[in-house]
Length: 639
Image 1 (spheres, rainbow, N blue to C red):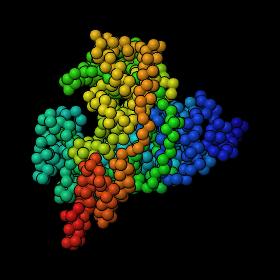
Image 2 (cartoon, helix red, strand yellow):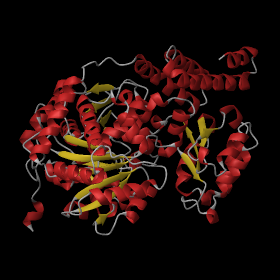
Image 3 (cartoon, one colour):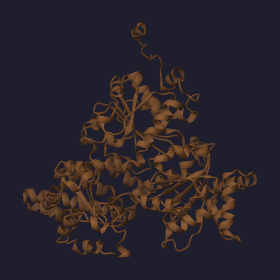
Image 4 (cartoon, helix red, strand yellow):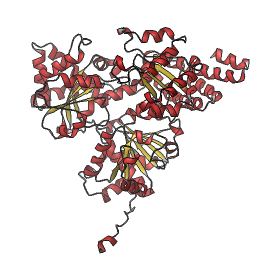
């Protein structure tokens, strides 16, 4: 019984900085000696200048160990300052991955929180509340009105560049046309039909009717209804939704958040769904996000347009920390291949599956990334059973297997296949726009430039899934018209890191050699085998070419003026977004006009500037609706 009275000693805070803390106090389970030099450099930059800043963004290239950097910083704040710290991942698979790495690789104690609050371990909740360990959870567990993490001092948001849909979810009300999500005519969602029937009486009627017919030209088109018209229909839309609450299922929570703020929302639609949401997420209306002492954002790249601010819904200044360009780790080697497949629009996935069946060795480990679940399921059905096939629910079995193929959809962030887990990666196109709003602004408003850096990040993230350290490598087969066109375009590739540009240019030349050979499919298979098996002659020649391509690239880091304009405009856009949410149309008008001013005088921003002129006019119109002052009417007409 005496052992019951043996109490554990408190951990010491006898250290001056995070690096000293980690080197002195972490042993159990630790498989590394400490952070690498560049990781230590980033941590000490944070420690010396950003410890007390509210919003801090830390940039490290793909595969360079952002997780360890974030955990050491979080552990320092927990131990030295007695803070509650939560490390936030985009999904539960990554929560598991971070917990495994933290405990078994880095020797840092963390607690996993997934599922509903009722499923949380009571013991783990108590340990966290006593500040005895970092919590690791997903975005959905943080971004809601009833979060367990309601009094947190520091949030560390991992992969913030890929978290926009997760963050926006509490304010994104989506109605699918078909209840099963696949287009079964027996399960038409009456909510979708009734709202579209209602909107067909607006000036948008021709577009709405056109979007519902089976016409290949409008298959992927997306549109929006004017805010001026929507004001006449919000009450009727609310009645439709409230009368069919049993059909809105997962969107009930989002509806409860936006139904009193519909005047701040846009309505986007295509032939498959309707989305109602504010332009940007009003995250600071959540007390746990607003009151926290520090918000830390981790990403492979943040770009130059303040898109992170738009994603997180924070208009205050964000401090950015990154390595000097000559100190950035490469994140491994990527041997890119661009097979030529003709008539890709016809039976596209079948052609990809046939090609892969020809060129991928049976006894290999390969990861196939698709842009949606439909393509994933088609690959699994079409690839022969001579391959061992795995899905996301059996990812651990894939890790442990000596060979096999795993097909995953939309897995471009965080999920790692490092070292011998896989050296062969197939990208079957990726979703360059991930939601109706992005698609609308990109295609209809000609504001694709707003998402240029996000698209770049998604591509880099996808390419880097199977090469996670400087010594790691992967062969990356690029399929899909959109993705190949993106990577073949000099203008679109030139902003990429120089090393990736050199790898792309080398891959294009190698692929051309293969295509012009006597037997392209046989030679493609031979090249894949040579590179994955590290054939000395093949590797030496490819490495020599990559280095030659690298030497030809200049170091011009001057950014186009429009990126700086988007950067300056962001804070006014966000302020306007919150003003609309709070029905403060006077301030919304002022901030929308400031955004318009910042976006002026650049032809590349004409579409996006026009969109903000439209929002300024809408704000002025709402002011006139309340005041009936002729001056306010003139303001609305003059915008």
